[in-house]
Image (cartoon, rainbow, N blue to C red; front, side, top):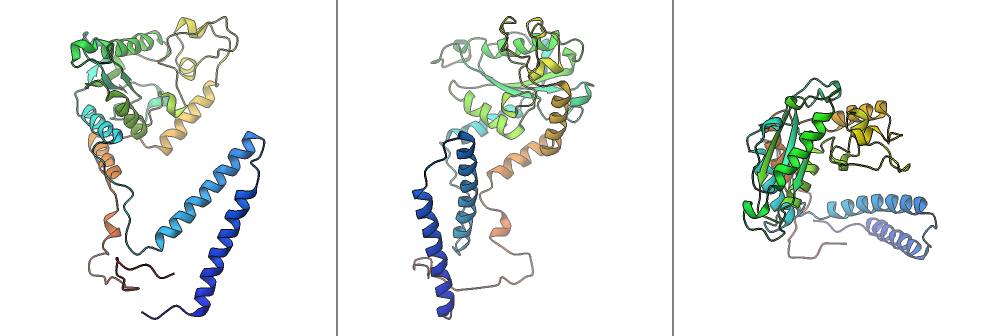
Length: 306
């Protein structure tokens, strides 16, 4: 391969020197006093730093995976537990008998409420959660107590009170009783994958899992869930909504367009498999029948040419 021309070397050296000067300037500036200004600057610089890292990666002719697969990582274990939960049978929420165990669960909606029509009768949960064991050292389901059933029963009671908008018979649930300590990582993976609209993390229609507020405390406002689904006496007694119903409905609609619901189990499995990919297949090969353009020969054990 021919050596780079002096002009090309000068351009590269000039680029590195300009970046070094910018880095020195950033080191010398004082952080802005106002939090909003400081956060805005940090966000903008982080975005440019990401672009710079991508440019540096592109200069390496050897492909890089997005990360190492670590079987011992909590996120890996959480993903396995979450996927196992999805494989469980769905049960009517209204007909659950008490059972022992702690773990993770998902609620599904099958009814006619218009705002939820994109997920009605699909495999997209409207809410996911966890139930911690009553004994933090529990080694079996009996020692964990009936925490998972109690959690589902709390949701049943809340839904049952929202008689003007919801019917208990329109709800089903899945759950998985897991070994103590794994429920938190599994819940995190479920929320991250499904982004359910009733979970606090999505910041859309949260509040169903609240158990009560003091109606005499003026700073308390009605949760979005209670605004959309009135019926819990303590919530109805609050004087003000956190968000108007029109805004909640708009946010739900925007969310379903941004995060299309999973309608089938096959869609879920495909999404999980896609998340596990380290590199796209096309990163290694070209389309069948096409030559691979070779821009340079290189030895992976030799230093890169600057």
